Amino acid sequence: MTEAQDQNGLRSPSLTRRGFLKAAGLLGAAGWGIGLLSPVHGHKRRRMVSEARQSQERGSVRFSISTYSYWHFTPKKIPIEYVIDEAARIGVSGVDVLHRQMASEDASYLRTLKRHAFTNGVDLICLSIHQDFVSPDAEERQKHIDHTIRCLELAHEMGIPAIRLNSGRWGTVRSFDRLMELEGKEPPISGYTDDDAFGWCIDSIEQCLPAAEKYGVVMALENHWGLTSSAEGVLRIVNAVDSPWLGVLADTGNFREHTYGQLEQIAPETVLISAKTYYGGGVWYSLDLDYERIARIFEEAGFHGYVTLEFEGSEAAESAVPRSIEMLRKAFRT
Image (cartoon, rainbow, N blue to C red; front, side, top):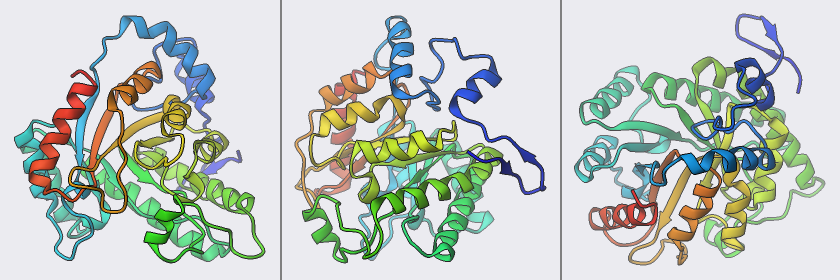
């Protein structure tokens, strides 16, 4: 990686995940990397957690609710404050805020959300954003880099420690319904290859690293269609960037093939889990997910962070969300 330049014009060597450990004097600590940040590549981290796992009790994960669970892009937005109230009522620790669901980016609104969460005993744990780094147009990619940096700033203002990041996709399949039929995979633009797209995505994320470090906000790359439709694609990006400010957001419902094997591959780099449920039938599809098996996968990888419910079914959220949380608690034995 090249040197990073901060906004004051000072240049300093970019920090790799391994370099971060050395700088902190923690490279040999077997338990490090099991919390929010996952700075060690999978095979190395597996050895670390296997040594530390026996001294850790299962059931140390915490649960949050995605605001999207109550609003599936319907015309009437569900207020973020309402979801915070519901999380407090159900007894859930956190809320994952969907950026597009926010009423405003004004400072007064951000502070209101922050205060409302605090007074309800709820943490705002992630800002889920939409951006797309897959474009041959450098100016277009810059727009999305700028948007990502802006969202890192918004997260910082709200006291949120992570943002959800996408890789982006080609856009050659216009219909989202058709994209779901194709399991999130689409052909490249004529004249380009997926290798080009991975290069653009890696470079764009690297340009966001100084802001992520400045604001103290981790970028969590989700397996969310396009380049990240497979565990291989997710890890290709994360390992190339190799920064403690980039981890994985593991979405349990977005690997349509070989679900458990692929979740196993990304588990060692996972900093957040998005747990899909489909009560009443999925909006686009339903998966019969074995959450006890999923819980074991992430336990064995040493995950002890937030598990966010992302309800994507047709049942009313008011009944389906509590049911989902109860099921997840039993699966993760909390």
